[in-house]
Image (cartoon, rainbow, N blue to C red):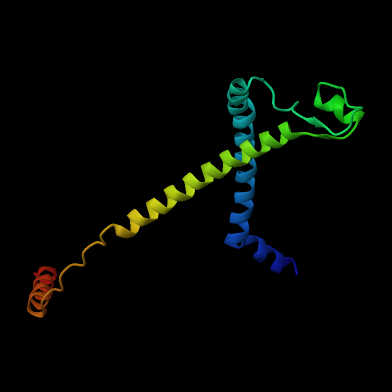
Length: 141
């Protein structure tokens, strides 16, 4: 049972999947930082606010707070600012993945289009025989 587990883990596709998940998590953190720290402030500057996280719609007249956290304590709210940030995050991540897949496909097309190395022309039998005779004479002589 242990041996089977070792062979399962050592398979290339399981290891590749684990590496992909780890890199994907790290890449997701980079994209989240890009959205939260660079893109969202620029977009919110154009929209007239610096922070999307406090954009919400109160669903009750009891909600009078101006921040999302305080409003959630007072009652139900639709936090569309958080949703907007996540949508922007997703679109950027999807765009980057699209560009990566497109680039990889282009590299694969270029690799397939590259001419295969030409095979050397077959040596005629008489030339091959003379070459063997020459090599024998060198070793004896």
